[in-house]
Image (tube, rainbow, N blue to C red):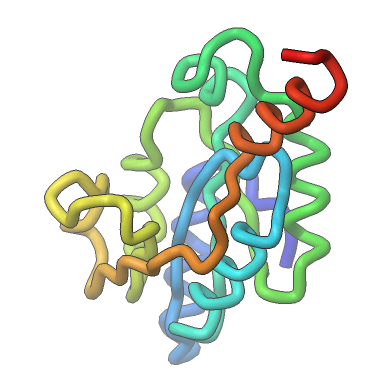
Length: 156
Protein backbone atom coordinates (compact mmCIF):
# COMPACT_ATOMS: atom_id res chain seq x y z
CA UNK A 1 0.00 0.00 0.00
CA UNK A 2 1.15 3.51 -0.67
CA UNK A 3 2.32 5.61 -3.59
CA UNK A 4 2.67 3.74 -6.88
CA UNK A 5 5.19 5.26 -9.27
CA UNK A 6 4.99 4.57 -12.99
CA UNK A 7 2.37 3.01 -15.22
CA UNK A 8 4.24 -0.31 -15.48
CA UNK A 9 4.24 -0.76 -11.69
CA UNK A 10 0.60 0.30 -11.56
CA UNK A 11 -0.33 -2.24 -14.24
CA UNK A 12 1.57 -5.00 -12.39
CA UNK A 13 -0.10 -4.10 -9.10
CA UNK A 14 -3.57 -4.09 -10.60
CA UNK A 15 -3.01 -7.41 -12.40
CA UNK A 16 -1.72 -8.99 -9.18
CA UNK A 17 -4.69 -7.73 -7.17
CA UNK A 18 -7.19 -9.02 -9.71
CA UNK A 19 -5.39 -12.40 -9.91
CA UNK A 20 -5.83 -12.62 -6.11
CA UNK A 21 -9.57 -12.18 -6.63
CA UNK A 22 -9.64 -8.60 -5.37
CA UNK A 23 -12.24 -6.17 -6.71
CA UNK A 24 -10.26 -3.08 -7.76
CA UNK A 25 -11.92 0.34 -7.55
CA UNK A 26 -10.42 3.46 -9.13
CA UNK A 27 -11.25 7.12 -8.82
CA UNK A 28 -9.35 10.32 -9.35
CA UNK A 29 -9.24 14.01 -8.56
CA UNK A 30 -7.14 16.95 -7.44
CA UNK A 31 -7.99 16.60 -3.73
CA UNK A 32 -6.47 20.04 -3.13
CA UNK A 33 -7.91 21.03 0.25
CA UNK A 34 -9.25 17.77 1.64
CA UNK A 35 -12.72 18.15 3.14
CA UNK A 36 -15.68 16.09 4.38
CA UNK A 37 -17.03 15.73 0.84
CA UNK A 38 -13.79 14.09 -0.30
CA UNK A 39 -13.68 11.73 2.68
CA UNK A 40 -17.32 10.66 2.23
CA UNK A 41 -16.83 10.15 -1.51
CA UNK A 42 -13.67 8.06 -1.01
CA UNK A 43 -15.27 5.92 1.70
CA UNK A 44 -18.25 5.23 -0.55
CA UNK A 45 -15.94 4.42 -3.48
CA UNK A 46 -13.99 1.96 -1.33
CA UNK A 47 -17.23 0.26 -0.26
CA UNK A 48 -17.68 -0.86 -3.89
CA UNK A 49 -14.67 -3.19 -3.79
CA UNK A 50 -11.66 -4.52 -1.94
CA UNK A 51 -8.93 -2.11 -2.99
CA UNK A 52 -9.19 1.61 -3.76
CA UNK A 53 -6.62 3.17 -6.06
CA UNK A 54 -6.81 6.96 -6.28
CA UNK A 55 -5.35 8.87 -9.20
CA UNK A 56 -4.22 12.33 -8.10
CA UNK A 57 -3.60 15.20 -10.48
CA UNK A 58 0.01 16.34 -10.06
CA UNK A 59 0.76 20.02 -9.47
CA UNK A 60 1.46 20.38 -13.20
CA UNK A 61 -1.88 18.76 -14.06
CA UNK A 62 -3.84 20.89 -11.57
CA UNK A 63 -2.35 24.09 -13.03
CA UNK A 64 -3.36 22.97 -16.53
CA UNK A 65 -6.95 22.45 -15.39
CA UNK A 66 -7.52 25.09 -12.71
CA UNK A 67 -4.97 27.83 -13.47
CA UNK A 68 -1.74 29.15 -11.98
CA UNK A 69 -3.11 29.81 -8.48
CA UNK A 70 -3.80 26.14 -7.88
CA UNK A 71 -3.04 23.80 -6.33
CA UNK A 72 -2.98 25.35 -2.91
CA UNK A 73 -1.53 22.21 -1.31
CA UNK A 74 1.51 20.67 -3.07
CA UNK A 75 1.20 17.17 -4.53
CA UNK A 76 3.44 15.42 -2.00
CA UNK A 77 1.27 16.74 0.85
CA UNK A 78 -1.98 15.85 -0.93
CA UNK A 79 -0.66 12.31 -1.44
CA UNK A 80 0.36 12.06 2.23
CA UNK A 81 -3.09 13.13 3.44
CA UNK A 82 -4.89 10.73 1.10
CA UNK A 83 -2.69 7.82 2.18
CA UNK A 84 -3.63 8.63 5.77
CA UNK A 85 -7.27 7.86 5.04
CA UNK A 86 -8.49 4.38 5.93
CA UNK A 87 -10.40 4.09 2.63
CA UNK A 88 -7.38 4.74 0.37
CA UNK A 89 -5.05 1.84 -0.40
CA UNK A 90 -2.89 3.23 -3.21
CA UNK A 91 -2.27 6.60 -4.81
CA UNK A 92 -0.80 7.32 -8.23
CA UNK A 93 0.12 10.80 -9.46
CA UNK A 94 -0.45 11.77 -13.09
CA UNK A 95 0.65 14.84 -15.08
CA UNK A 96 -1.93 14.72 -17.86
CA UNK A 97 -5.21 16.64 -17.77
CA UNK A 98 -7.15 13.37 -17.66
CA UNK A 99 -6.38 10.01 -16.01
CA UNK A 100 -6.92 8.04 -19.24
CA UNK A 101 -3.46 6.38 -19.26
CA UNK A 102 -3.78 5.54 -15.57
CA UNK A 103 -7.23 3.99 -16.00
CA UNK A 104 -5.99 2.01 -18.99
CA UNK A 105 -3.15 0.65 -16.82
CA UNK A 106 -5.42 -0.20 -13.87
CA UNK A 107 -8.36 -1.58 -15.86
CA UNK A 108 -10.49 -1.36 -12.71
CA UNK A 109 -13.45 -3.52 -11.90
CA UNK A 110 -15.21 -0.31 -10.83
CA UNK A 111 -14.50 3.22 -12.07
CA UNK A 112 -16.01 5.84 -9.76
CA UNK A 113 -16.82 9.50 -10.46
CA UNK A 114 -19.10 12.05 -8.89
CA UNK A 115 -22.73 12.07 -10.04
CA UNK A 116 -22.10 15.54 -11.50
CA UNK A 117 -20.25 13.78 -14.36
CA UNK A 118 -22.48 12.59 -17.23
CA UNK A 119 -21.62 9.00 -18.14
CA UNK A 120 -20.54 9.92 -21.67
CA UNK A 121 -17.96 12.40 -20.30
CA UNK A 122 -16.29 9.95 -17.90
CA UNK A 123 -12.80 9.36 -19.25
CA UNK A 124 -11.60 5.75 -19.36
CA UNK A 125 -15.01 4.15 -18.89
CA UNK A 126 -14.23 1.71 -21.71
CA UNK A 127 -11.42 0.19 -19.60
CA UNK A 128 -13.63 -0.55 -16.57
CA UNK A 129 -16.05 -3.41 -16.00
CA UNK A 130 -18.49 -1.03 -14.31
CA UNK A 131 -18.88 2.73 -13.87
CA UNK A 132 -20.52 4.11 -10.73
CA UNK A 133 -21.50 7.76 -10.28
CA UNK A 134 -21.70 8.78 -6.62
CA UNK A 135 -23.92 11.71 -5.61
CA UNK A 136 -22.35 14.24 -3.27
CA UNK A 137 -23.75 14.45 0.27
CA UNK A 138 -21.95 17.66 1.19
CA UNK A 139 -22.24 21.05 -0.51
CA UNK A 140 -18.53 21.81 -0.24
CA UNK A 141 -15.54 22.11 -2.55
CA UNK A 142 -12.00 23.46 -2.47
CA UNK A 143 -13.20 26.46 -4.49
CA UNK A 144 -15.98 27.17 -1.98
CA UNK A 145 -13.51 26.92 0.91
CA UNK A 146 -11.16 29.38 -0.82
CA UNK A 147 -14.06 31.78 -1.47
CA UNK A 148 -15.10 31.61 2.18
CA UNK A 149 -11.54 32.30 3.40
CA UNK A 150 -11.16 35.26 1.04
CA UNK A 151 -14.55 36.65 2.06
CA UNK A 152 -13.89 36.32 5.78
CA UNK A 153 -10.23 37.31 5.94
CA UNK A 154 -9.70 39.60 2.98
CA UNK A 155 -13.02 41.43 2.96
CA UNK A 156 -13.56 40.20 -0.59
